[in-house]
Image (cartoon, rainbow, N blue to C red):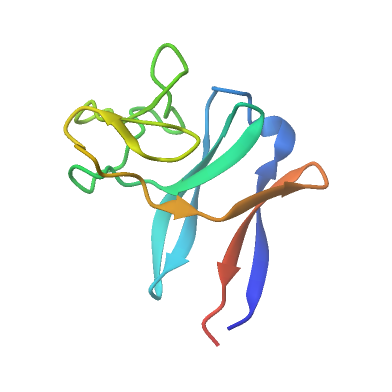
Length: 118
């Protein structure tokens, strides 16, 4: 399987603890919703799916952080996740976590790394 980079957004589009950028990623041959955020100066990507019940996290397109900009939060269930690891930090996710998506920041841009299914 070959690995490819696909542009998600310009690096400047992601403020630390601010709005994320939604995109789709291929998982097991299907396109799945995902997102990327900046936290602690780094970018992190996850499937846009709560570990409690598989619903998208953002309450408004791209709004993934809680009011304190400390946790990623499911708007439907109130589950909170560590932005740097995706691990459940409280709420109904109970020990679960977000599914990571491999992203990289380079040349003032953010890319998702995907494996092509040749």
